[in-house]
Amino acid sequence: MRQEKQIDLSVVMPVYKQENKVVSYLKNLDKILAGLNINYEIICVVDGFLDNTFKNAKKYVNKRIKIVGYEKNQGKGYAVRLGMSKAKGKIIGFVDGGFDLKYSCISLALEHMKWYNADIMIGSKRHPASKVEYPWPRRILSWGYQIGVRLLFGINIRDSQVGIKFFKREVIKKIMPKLLIKEFAFDIEILAVANRMGFSRIYEFPIELELEFGTSTIASIGFFKTIWNMLWDTLAVFYRLKILHYYDA
Image 1 (cartoon, helix red, strand yellow):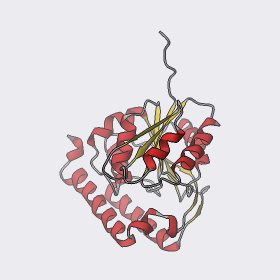
Image 2 (image 1 turned 180 degrees about the vertical axis):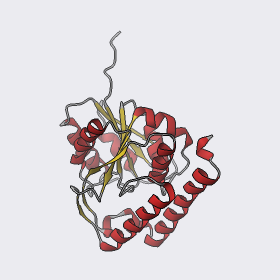
Image 3 (image 1 turned 180 degrees about the horizontal axis):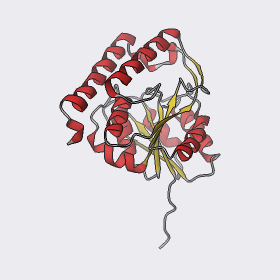
Image 4 (image 1 turned 90 degrees about the vertical axis):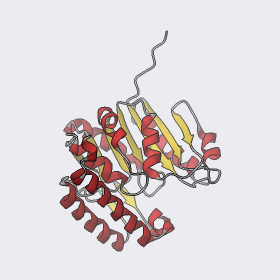
C-alpha cells in the first residue's frame, strides 16, 4: 500500500461573500506556496452559503486544495477552527483572503519558525522590516488595542491582529478544543490560550500590507460596531482566562 507523503504546511483561508474574487485569492495563494518547494495543502472555508462563493471556489480545486463550507454565516473564528480541524500539516496556519496582504511573506514566516524554534509565528505591522500602508485612524486604534492586550494578557508582542499566523501542529491540537470565540477577537484568544498553556515561544515576522478603509471588513460592516464587539470579546477572553480560569480546565 502506497504511503501518503507527509504534508509540511496546511493553510486555512476563510472567505465570506467573495463570489467574484475567491478564485483569484486561491490562485494567488496556490502560486506562492507552489514556489516554496514544500508539500502543502490549502483549505478554503466558505463562511456561509450566502452567494456563489462556494460554487465558484469549487471551480479551482486541485489535489492540494479543499473547499469546505456550511449554510449559515458563523464568523471568522469558527471558519478558521473548522479548517484547522481538517488540516494535516506539520505546520498549520491561516491567512485572510484578499489582496491587501501579500502572501509572499509566508516564506519568511516559515524560515523564522525554524530559526527561533517558535511555537507560533504571527505577521506584524510593527515589525521593523514590515511595509505597511493603512489609514491613520486605524493605526491609532491598533496601537491602543495592542497596549491593552499587553496589559491584560502579558504577551510580549507588538501586533496581534494581522490575518496571517502559523502554529506547530501540537499547539493547535492542544488549544483548539478550548477556544470559544466565533467572530471578533479570535486572534487574541488563540494567542492568550496558547501562552497560558506554555506555548510562549511566540514571535513576529514582517509583512507587506496595503489597506484602505473602502476595502476593509471594518468599513463594510460598521466601524464603531466592530470596535465595540472587538473590545467586548477581548474582555470576555480576559474574564474566562484570569477570573474563571475556564481555559485551565
